[in-house]
Image (cartoon, rainbow, N blue to C red; front, side):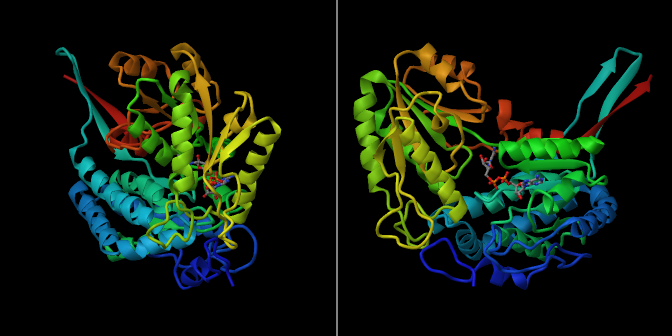
Length: 487
Ligand code: NAD
């Protein structure tokens, strides 16, 4: 019996997963599936080095055909995958909710439609992709060839499983690479479904392979250390990025990392308060706060601090925490008991360090089973406190007042992270001025999570290496060769 983190104990991922294959095409299910009470037991197979070796070999064999296939043909297959995701969106959303505990309404409106769009976007984008040419007067002409790199290892996290996986798979395949996927051990199901969909869409055997398993000393490390893997794209924790970078260094693999964040939300006194409060509640507690882009440090200019806080607290308390399958639910269950304990540990230590809880801070009384936590707002914390410095990755935010533009910029930049930031102001000059000084890869002004897939996505400092999106994804997933022709 597998215990789901939602309100009812039910058999989910593992039951579904046991009958599926790991990977498509020439290599078949080889993971050991077992249910136990350890992390990842809900369905992640125990793939390790032998499985990775077989998957990489299959991907290498498939590279020749896929890498040289006309772009229009590759693009058509990717568009078919998008269509099939759309056609199966109800089922995929249900599975995503079963695996993660996120509200079904979110899986239906964000995770699955975006997964389909990731394929559609890169399928179209690749057709318009060009390269440079430079003429050296009448001496020579340089032009650049863009080619696929080879076999990519794609490692994804559990918070937006299919969305983030397809964000890597789609440009990887569009560019002509083949891949071995290592999904998060806690959320294997939609990755397996994706493999089935790819097969149905006509993706040639061996182009996409899925190996389920754990990270360290298991499938993850076997993939990152494999000598025949050329690229590693990882989304995960900053500490995982460091481990993967060490492993990838053994044969100098190219790496792209999307890592953790501790994102500041800066609200100036002239902001549209209704909009700022509404959106800040969303950016704090969406997906139980388990989004790398969630704004977990809220800075409010002193004149509106009390009013803002009072309105935030009221709204946070009114969020419905509960069964992810109930349409009224705003906040579902956290990913695992281990993670819930970890998040509660952050709250306890914040209180010990002088923090005051204004909303939430505990498991909801009416939910006796499942890994639920009330949306939590903590104030009166010092900027050096752990809760202000470390990524919690749960429905927990701190709110602090600030007195000047310089002060808030300095505080916002005072972490190892640099993923995203949000600025709320109606002063246009100030908005641009502050955006230019914040250390973050993505900055939103008077909005949050508004994404144009052509733009660079990624983090500064310890939030990542490289950028994804539009041409930036192809910078990673292709090799450039300059050809110099003497005239
Ligand atoms: P995680 O780092 O624990 O795991 C991510 C993936 O890496 C999993 O598939 C895991 O099995 C694998 N892994 C772990 N150790 C490994 C190793 N030594 N070698 C190879 N693979 C290894 O992250 P998580 O808990 O699944 O996800 C939450 C984290 O991801 C948070 O820090 C969050 O901020 C980050 N995240 C970042 C972005 C972004 O775009 N920047 C998006 C989503 C999540």
